[in-house]
Image 1 (cartoon, one colour):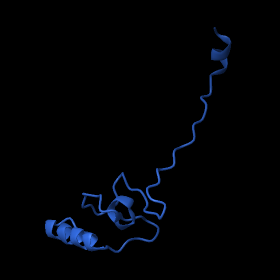
Image 2 (image 1 turned 135 degrees about the vertical axis):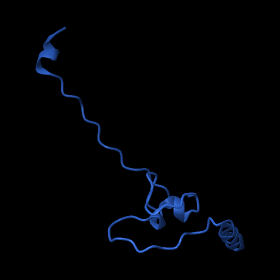
Image 3 (image 1 turned 180 degrees about the vertical axis):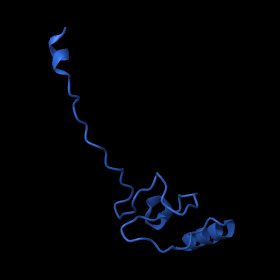
Image 4 (image 1 turned 180 degrees about the horizontal axis):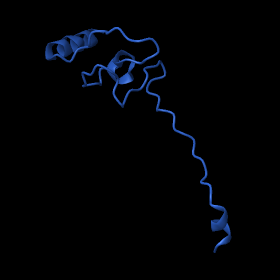
Length: 82
């Protein structure tokens, strides 16, 4: 626990400490909700979440959901040519 406090003091001294919590709109994620911000792995100081935003959860880092792969539709004439 002492190491964490020391790390927080060092981060504050360098100016990379946790950003002030801003009032956020309901239903919209903020940097404070991001896994990287909560684990002090984020070096960005933005007003809104960046493209690498991942929700912080008790399960750790969860990869984003991938879109389903759909088979291509072949044109009707292309199937009989050959």
